[in-house]
Image 1 (cartoon, rainbow, N blue to C red):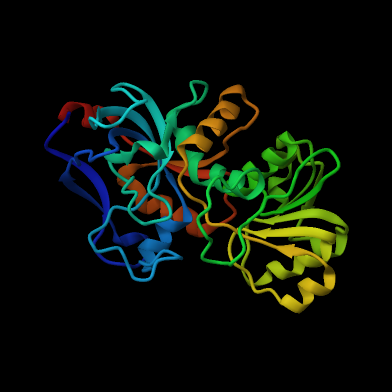
Image 2: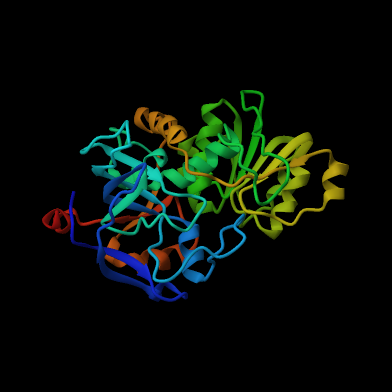
Length: 344
């Protein structure tokens, strides 16, 4: 097992992308149930910039659980470097990917090495590289747990009732808002995998990309209001969410469902009057589900879109790109393995 120090991106203060610092820190040691992963690529996700901006309490937590300095990041792809004695199923040299310790801010993935719970990992699909593997975990698991199988019985901090995915088949009509983003482009593909008819909503520049992924209908939200064009759908998955999410309620047929990925502002009386359901979930790490997604990625049934890549040392630029919006797929940080290998 490597000892000594490694490079990692840390927050010493909250603020804009400029607070991300490229530091020298000790290489972590895997604890019980963990493996040490030599990181090759790291996916960039919204919780990373929420933490950077000052959010230190994860929804569902009673108190802040983060102290500075902190290493952000949850999505990782790399190679197993060491295995705790109580871990079965992984060996040194295995290529793995995973969503680490979510929901929490303790993934610590923006680093050359990370100690990762074995239960959060799956074998990296052989058919894709580390960049594409690192882009998948949080976004793909979110789409899977909203649409296919929640996979856990933890209560959501956003609602009392458990989230129940809608059955998807050839008779199901689905509208996906924010279809070009991380969660959206996976949700589109999973809905098509199940045979559903999918309407994708995004800005016009993304139409060729979303048509290629299988969208049956495309609406450019900069030119038309989708809620005025779409009616009687079975399911809306709103990957944008927020206060405006309620405008999609009237696109649903009675008995339909709306799944806002981010909590919205809904009127319970309106929901009852329309005879629809609004339900959300909180994505959680799940190595078993990730292995299922890995099989789809390996066969090409599911594809990962990469918006842009940056080196780990240039995490600030990655966060600046995220702030610009209109992201197609995912942003990924890459790790220079030559330097890390020299420290092993």
